[in-house]
Amino acid sequence: MEPILIELRRYRHGDLPADFRDLLLGVHADAYATQMDDPFIQRFPWFVDHWSGLVGFDCVVGFDGTEPVGFAYGAPATPGREWWRECLARPPEHSDTFSVSELMVRPRWRKTGMSDQLHAALIADRPEALAVLLVDPEHPKVQDLYESWGYRKVGDRQPFPDSPRYAVMLRDLP
Image (tube, rainbow, N blue to C red; front, side, top):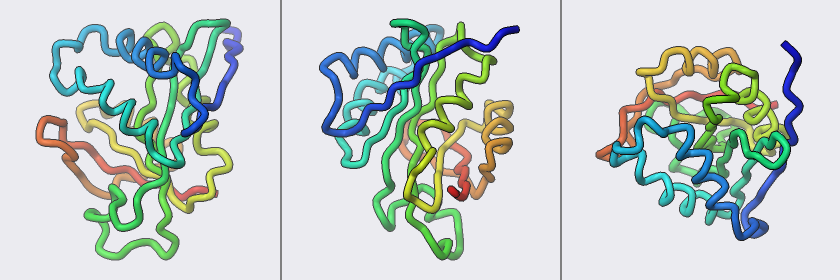
């Protein structure tokens, strides 16, 4: 199978195009088409607005021609409120953290290496010492994928009363 040539575009807080929100919501609607009746899944527009409003927000979107195929986004964690903080007895020596909030790929482009490309582009050249993300443990293959990228599970966390209980995964950044 020939690799798919995808254009990666970076978007940052304060420099988002007018259609940015709709672009992410379109990918989300396709990625979660069978789960759109879940109230937590329906809250995704709020998460897009929240995260894209954060100083330091960073997003990478992959395009096949004009079609967005997936995205990854996050922002620097607020010191003292990092997702890993409640899981570790002692914080790492260098604890500045980039929180990877979303990594989403449309079904047609899954299992093509697209998530790896998006994630790698998102965390490349980050100035933080650590990256953290949350993964639903009911998806062990996804957790295995993150482990193959250097993440390790450090605990569990339920960030919202209506959210799943997630595995907190942490990795060092170069």
